Amino acid sequence: MYLLKLSVPSIIYEPLTNVTDLEEELKCLQENCWKQELELYEHETMIPERPLKQNYDSLRHNAAWYMRKELVADCVVRGGCCSRKCGCCRQRHLDSGRKKGIGHCTEECACCCTYRDMEPSAKDKEEFAKRLRGLLQSDNPACLLRMANVYFLDYGFCGFKIG
Ligand SMILES: [Zn+2]
Ligand SMILES: [Zn+2]
Ligand SMILES: [Zn+2]
Image (cartoon, rainbow, N blue to C red; front, top):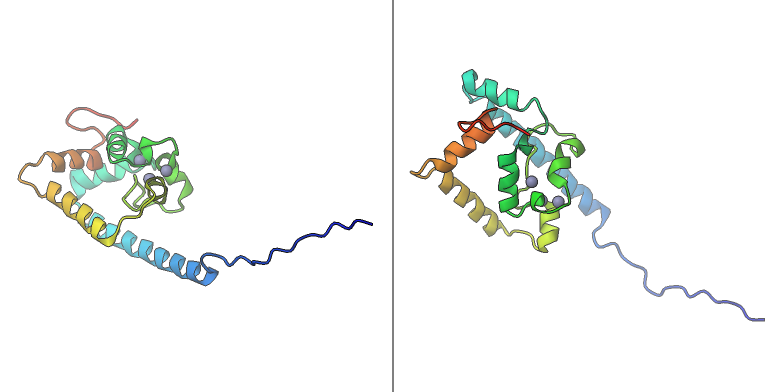
């Protein structure tokens, strides 16, 4: 009689990362989020009440405020998720339990890193932050004014509207 012999794999696969490492990483990320939310809150308390803080709060009544066309266009140009069909940015305010600091992709977006098949180094991140600071602090105020419009006004100088 022929007996089918099941072969038992000789290699028992080890998980690539063990659960303790992942739990440790999650704990660090949650702590980091909490610290950044506190920092954001501190900066928000520095915004003068009228009219800037009023505008700022009014704009953020809509959890998807950051999907205004200027910010989507910016994400597209920077090669973020809005330049692809994954829909990460659009979903972010729905998927995240967090209310603060939701926005478009940073250089550390997991989906973007997977798409580019690379993660930015500490040096890259430092360079990105330096370039943004340079633009905002430049003698030419074009970038600063554009950002102020988009982050603080329901209607900018050109009459744009969220949508
Ligand atoms: Zn994505
Ligand atoms: Zn992304
Ligand atoms: Zn985006």
